[in-house]
Image 1 (spheres, rainbow, N blue to C red):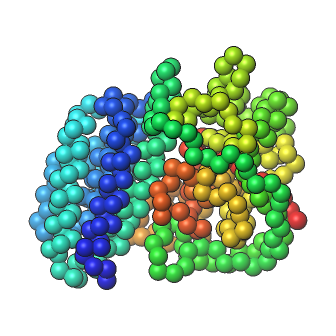
Image 2 (cartoon, rainbow, N blue to C red):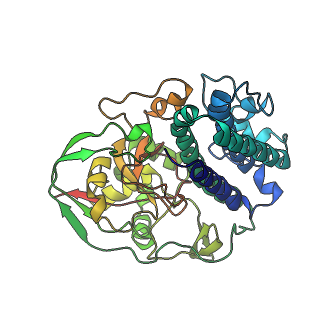
Image 3 (cartoon, rainbow, N blue to C red):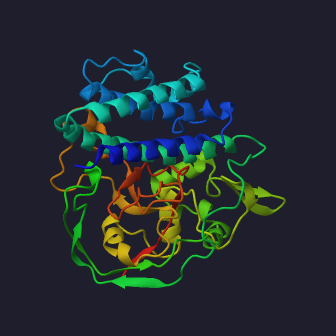
Length: 391
């Protein structure tokens, strides 16, 4: 069992990073919700705090009483077994508790968590550690969501304000060429003692045919060729649902691309900047990724091809990469019992898997078996494209 001081140090390190992410924000930035998928930063702060209160303090603290009796209703996300909650699209309607009060709530829960970890007996500590690890990884997921949501919030302002000063951290030149893989029977899924979410289990076999993967992600310049060839106006490249969305929402370029005085620019966390041709194209939906692949005469990799190739892939960790795999349970998957079992299992339908991590993913939160998943029309996350083909 880890030393209690080490446990507390990890807890405090993860919690401190959330505060660091929020440090550049003004109070007004905390409260708006410009679309249903984007939660106000104040809600993220309250929600990840409530998670520790609900699943650790409430479960393992003796005669525990919540900090506030209504906070479970305000900050529960989707745990139906726990009770009613604020509807997701209405999180931005709430002005109370204030931002300051939510930070006070966070500090109080942190204080109670420290006391629990320091004072509970060894048997209780052993039971709570797996749940604590889920809570910390859950907060790291919300740290990435905080950055993507903040970017979308700031994009609504005609001033296109920068979240932080400096330059984009994206690598400017994507790797070229292709790498072949023999295929065969491969082992997929998490193994070992390190943490993994339940959707990465159980480890199992998959049969792959010989295939090749592009060494780099699709660049802005390559995607521009698709656009200039009429890619958004040619239905032959699009899945039916994707074509409907292109027409309904008038997509003509990736999210955050803007044309000013005949030149393309991209809104970044550092503000509006000229489009970098060699940088990987970012903020595209699955439908756009699939349409580009069809236009290029290629396809998207399956998540199993991607995982089997991870040791040889270049440029991973910059952007989540769309795969052609539907988000489904692995053979033999069983969700955990209780409300914590609602974390992943009930979302295994109508979504596509992404692999790899992004510049917004916290350090130490990326691993080869990690399965991110989003609906195919979503594009406010840091998502890109890697092409595949049959060998």
